[in-house]
Amino acid sequence: MINFDESIILIDLEKKTKEDVLREMGENLAKKGLVKESFIDAVIAREVEFATGLPTKGVSVAIPHTDVEHVNTKTISVATLKDPVDFGVMGDPEDTTPVGIVFMLAMDQAHDQLSLLQRLMQIFQNEEILAYLANEKSKTNIKNLLAEKLDFALEGGEQQCLKRNRS
Amino acid sequence: MSKKKQVLIACGAGIATSTVVNGAIEEMAKENNLSLDLVQIKIAEVGSYVDTADLLITTAMTKKEYPFPVINARSFLTGIGVEDTKKQILEELKK
Image (tube, rainbow over the protein chains, first blue to last red):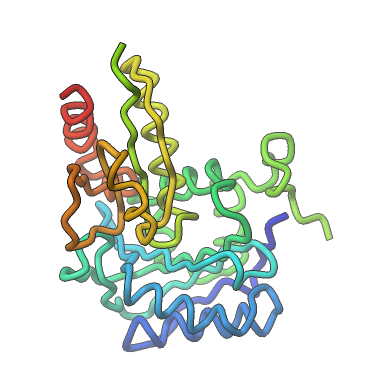
């Protein structure tokens, strides 16, 4: 089951540092009970140790995440940043990249979300979709686009953990 | 018959990026008729494989020295430079 709705989409988040971005997104998830309180510090610490910024052909993105034990319900929180915030580049921590969209991954099981993650990476390889997401002000439009692109609705037969949240 | 090459696929948490890279390497191995022993781990676990691994493919580059080559796998996530990375991996595996 993946929990995904407007309440975990943040538009034009105005923060100066990656820590502040991660804290705001993490606190929102914790408030909704999707992650434990411990997720917030864990995701910040993980970002410092293993940066997740990804330069793309368009808007740079980041995919902060941390260990499964901090997660209650699998979800992806999305934030568009009002002004880009520097994140370390994955695999090249001495470099930074100005990130415009953050996809915070709260995964509750290791190794079993391949198709979901592959579809997410396909979005990162499509600069038009990235530009749309970065500029879109409607949470519902972002939710609908991502639900379609990430194919949440069709996961059921393939991987039971990704069944559509019908509640 | 030569022994299957052991390829470590590592990221910080062992849950997200290594999963994607693992999928990409599986596909690449199939296309090239390579039979590989793929092991998906956290970067912190690499130490347990120093005696057995032939190659480390990772999105969490470290400054540590290993007795096997290390290849940065970020291109599998962004698509930028992915053909070069694949070529680099194939060259290592054919050695």
